[in-house]
Length: 448
Image (cartoon, rainbow, N blue to C red; front, side, top):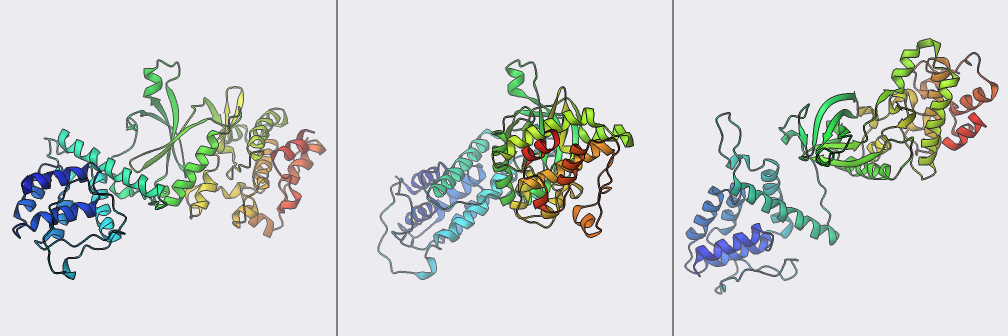
């Protein structure tokens, strides 16, 4: 077998994931030893790059590793996979420190950078252009891209199993696709209409192709596209996904159903059930200073306490209870956005920067970054209860720490029973020990 065939076999084994990069370098270097020339191997690298079967910068990296010098021995303890392509026997040569392979981590870091850049860019530099200037589809290049993705993630999985987990970081600056009405995510969800927008992201009504193809009566879902700042915090992504998975387990009539947490490129989104109705903040605004009142407010608070009590009993804290996160659906009350604020802070950045913590409804302890507890949600419940009864925020929208510093106290709404007022006033206490411990405790004090 000549050098060209052996080089092709080694490159094919590398692309398919059967040969690690260090072995590929050693295999290609061994082919140079026969006559001291690297020209045939370099020609094959150039050919593979031109055909789109190998990224050009990776081919350049390999060519730089060859250099026409004898191959350095690969240490037995380098943790490499057994060779799967026969290597030509190397001739004895004097050790040459100048051509020794770099440490495995160094080479892998270089390959990681090359491969990740190629994957993120979808090999755009190797694709031709159509008349509109867009990159053309190329079956051979697409197959090569799939091979590289397979190699990348198979190696990551193997390393993770061995305790060497790689942190995945999304770089939104490399994301060129615009997301808006009509866009399709994961080849499944088609954004149909915008139904809400806030600091944490944008909510769309989306067509679910699987539901549509299954001829479901309701082919729509709600899709929350998370704000771009989340993508700068890899640890936040991990914790947000963990919170979304936990929220999936909270099957309760008063908690919105979470279908999935997904990612398309650098775009992160949560798929939820689509609700019809209005958020509580709009209902309070419609009522104005006349207030929603106890008769309707009682039904809303019963639903809130039931859903939140279910979560608290399972050790899950919402951490961002506010009227905008309460939805009045047909015949029911639904809690939205469980745990995202908690995940944001656990991920290493202030959730208030994304609207993930609403100061007017946060307890003093949450604002002061103390450990979150279920009584933090109770403070927010107290604020909502007061708005339903009085038609305004208990401290005119001021944060709890400011209200505490100014020694503010909420005025008692008119025509409110003693038992109800005592429960609401206790929930609004600035000190934790004075508030009901959880949503179940607040419900017991409020309804008896």
